[in-house]
Length: 220
Image (tube, rainbow, N blue to C red; front, side, top):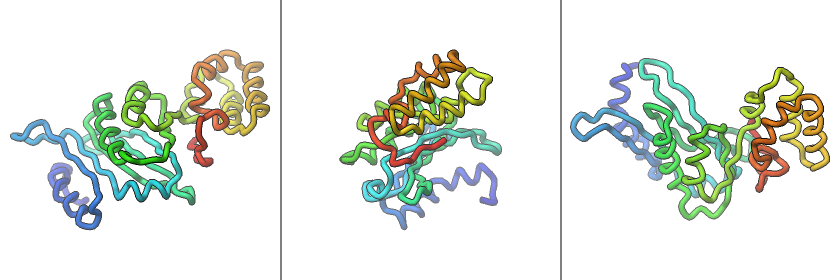
């Protein structure tokens, strides 16, 4: 923590070896450019034992990406879940040199391998990144892929804050009457914004129409 970035990366293998002493089910992988120069490209770690832990969590996995600060401005890919007390529960992390389809495929395939034999269907929530829309169904064929209402509302081409607020209310609606009441408000006040919204299948963002319950675990 107090050494240089170069030294910290050199300790990765030793660090994970120490963690595995207390967590035998820890999954980690480090990739380099070649066996000769061992130039670091990406790594992943996933806490275990997954099959025992996941059954205690809500059937929701949230994946996202952020940028790292410091000398090496790489990308951090994350997967988290929510426990029965609505606390965030970290599942897996990956640091990679860039956010590409290849990076997301690597992360989701490595992370998804923990679900082999898992008999509970769950919901994967993400933003509408084109790479994720393509990769998630391949890595989690037994999951439902849905999107954050927060990201959708922020991308609505409108100057009316009421449109975003009404859209959020529509995402939370628990009856058809309430859902279409809010959608009709948007139609009457912001038809352009409505066109963007209806261009996204409601089964991917509406709590009422998603094919499985998120256990009220909606992230905004």
